[in-house]
Structure formats: C-alpha cells, structure tokens
Image (cartoon, rainbow over all chains, first blue to last red; front, side, top):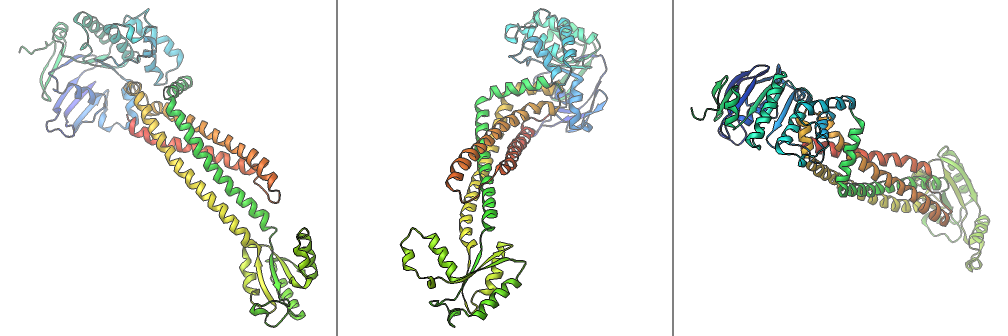
Amino acid sequence: MILFDGVTKLYANQERPALDEVSLEIEKGEFVFLVGPSGSGKSTFLRLVLREERPTKGQVWVAGKELNRLSNWKIPALRRQIGTVFQDFRLLPNKTVAENVAFALEVIGKPASHIRKVVPEVLEVVGLEGKEERRPDELSGGEQQRVAIARAFVNRPILLIADEPTGNLDPGTSVGIMKLLDRINQLGTTVVMSTHDQAIVDQMRRRVIELEGGHVVRDQSRGVYGYAR
Amino acid sequence: MRANFVASEVSSGIRRNLTMTMAVIITVAVSLGLFGASMLVRAQVSTMKDFWYDKVEVSIFLCGKGSDTPSCAGGPVTEAQRDQIKADLESLKPLVDSVYYESQAEAFARFQEQFKNSPIVDNVKPTALPESFRVKLSDPTKYDVVASAFAGRPGIEQVNDQRKILDKFFRLLGGLQLIALLIALSMLVVTVLLIVNTMRVAAFSRRRETSIMRLVGASNFYIQLPFLLEAAVAAGIGAILAVVGLVFVKIIVIDQVLATSFQFTAFVGWDAVLAIAPLMILVGVGLAAIAAFFTLRKYLRV
C-alpha cells in the first residue's frame, strides 16, 4: 500500500532533513501507529503520502503509483483513494453534518442520487444517526471528529491517514474514536495514524513505527508507545 | 459536474464578497463604457468621412482681373488656358470623377444666394468673384495629385481642397477618440488589478473549503470554476451595464440631441452599436477570465 524507499525530505532553509533515508513498507489492510516527538518527521511522512510534498531523494509508492512520476493532474485521483482526518477536524461551520459529508462527494462530481444514498449510510457507521441537521458548533469534539471521519470514509478510500485524530479529545472520547477507526480498518481500509497518545497505542497493540530526528528508530508489530524503553 | 452545486457556490461567493463584486461590476462598466464610447467616436468619424468626402470638391480658381499671385502675372485667364485646363482635368480620369465649370456669373448667383440676408452682397460686383473648376475626385485622399498638376500653372490663381478644412475637424475628433481610448485602457488595467485582488480575497475567504476540496481529491478545474464564474458573472454584468449605457448614448445623445441640432451631417447608425457591443462584452469577460485564471494559478495550487 505504502512503500518508502530511501526517502529524504529536506525543506528549504533547513539544515537537518525532516526525513533522512527512510525505507519502510506498509501492507494493505494494516493498522499502523506513527509515534515520536514533535518534529520527528511524522507530519512530513503523511504529507509525502498525500503528495502535498515531494521527496528530496528516494521514492514514495502509494497504491501502486510512484508519486514522483505522478503528473499534477492525476493527484486528485490519488487523493480520492485516500481519506484524511486531522486533529482540528476541519469541518465547514456553516454546513450541517450531512452537508459536510456530502461536500466531499459533491466536489468530486458524484451524482445527487448517489450522495443521498451513501451519506446516511456512513453517518450510521460513525454513529451519528439523528444528528444529520446539526451544525459542527452544536456537537461535542468527539462527535465533530466522527463527522470528519465520516467525510474521510464516505468515498470508501483504500487508505485512511489520521494526523493525531485524538489530540483534541479527552481519553473517554478517544476510545470511541479508536473503536471507530478500528472498525474502518476491519472493513478493509489501511489506516496510518500519527499520535502522541500513549494509552491508546498501548491498548490497541498494533504495528508501531517510531520516528526520531527523521530516522525510523523502531518498527514493531503489536508494539507499545515505548518512551519507557 | 453538478451544475446546481456550482451555481450555489458561485452565488454564495458573490454574496459573501458583495462589496468587492460591486466594485468589479462598476469599474468594468465604466472602463468598458469608455472603451465603447471611443469606438463609437471612431465609427462616427468614419461615418462623417464617408458622408463628407462624397461631397467635397477640389476647387481650381482661375485668374481674374484683380488676381495678384505670380501665376496670374499674365492677366486674366485666357480662353486657350481654360480649355487646356479642362482637357487636362478630363485626362486625369478615373481619379477625376467629374468636372464642373462655374463661370463668374454663376459664382455671383451662388454668392448672392448664400449671403442674401447680408449687406455684403450690395458691395460685391459680379466680376470680383473668380471663375473656377469644381472637381470631384473618385478618391478624395488623392488631392495631392491634382494640386501638384495644377497649382502655380499660368491662369490658375489657387487650388483649394475642401477636405483640408474637414481634416482639421476630423483630427480633433480623432484626438478626442484617442484620449478616450487611453483613459479606457488605463481603466481596463485598473479593472484587471481589481479583479486580481478580488480573487485573492475570495480565495482567502474560501481557503477552508478549498483546502478540504484538495484533500478529498477535487480537480483543479472544480476548485477554480466557482472563482472563474464569479469573476465572469461580475464582469458580464458590468459589460451589460456598459452596453446599456452605450445604447442610451445612441438614443439620447446622438439621435435626440446631436442629430436634431446638426442636421447637415450624418451620425452613426445602429449597425455601429451592434458591432461594438459584442466587442465590449468580449473584452470585459475575456479580461476577467484571464485575470482570474492567472490569480488562481498562483493562489489555488494543488
């Protein structure tokens, strides 16, 4: 699903690369935690997968495509296969829950009949039935993140990128979000999640990739957060 | 492509950005109005040229008793000179369309007719007016050919081109048209800058939407289309206002005021307005689209 081959990313005006000769592979259907301190390269890793950045050196393969060779006009097609969830939810405040989810389909030109059918389905999957007409500011943080996950998942992506999705949530709410991401993973979507949340990583017991200073310092299946190494 | 989705995005974009959109509409209307007006003046000049050049003549005045130019040193024009001039004029066909000889008696009659309400008539004797050839040219711009052939020749006092008088007037109109065109062009530049800025503000106020659109894989075209249409709609409204203004100028200023006050000349017809209006709309919408396109390439990249 994702293959990094000797990837180095050096941002302009910086001496130390954000990622330094990183090589790793993530298989289809995996659930992977990306851990490490701030500035360790987690965000750069995710931005490279989304082709928001290009590597300075090395190759990034996503869903069978080498992203350096992907022409600009094919980027939207790549991103339609990838769902994205962020710490700050990134919902549209003037749209209802259902409209926020529908927006993701409208802007890629899906027909209205399709949208009417799949939006209620995905809202049921994330447990928001009955709240379709609410606006984001009427929802709790956990509910807002469920809307964001519904929007990321509504197009049935093969890969879900979650950048600290529980970073703004309390522990109890985070557990619910993790259960939801786990369920999405069970439905066949590969999930890559960056996090600082030790309790969640320790509890889930999935593959853990730890970055530090742009290097992979640990890659462990069924791992723990591991600052207490 | 979901047409109603795009339409609702465009209308909400315009509403959100109403003051800037109004500014775009007004500058587009004013600059295109000036542009159209200058085109109209140009059409007017060419209408008047067609009308007047058809009527202007080259006058070849022959020497009379009191003539004191060097070419008249030999006294009044002789019969032989007059016949030779007429024959030479005839030989210049087809440039010379027609030649009409006006005798002193005819010149006096015309003079009396033109100044019948003035006491000057009583002081002028028939012999004071020169006899002349009135020459109509098939191409009035080739006056020089006639002038160089006849000016200074014995028996000819003066060769006069009526077109020269008209040309002064046309140059004035042409100057006015150039000024209007320059103002219009600078206004169009202002319009483009304003559209660029409006697009920047619009892109900024919709950055949340566009960032989500990029993430979920909307195509560039889909992301930029609402902005392009917004600019095109604003410019289109401005262009329509400018065309309406032009039609009002034609109906009120030209047809009702100028044409009734100056009946001796011709004014531009509706065919000129019909030719200019699409050009105005094309220039307006085209400029807006180009300005928007380049702004969006800068501010809304994938």
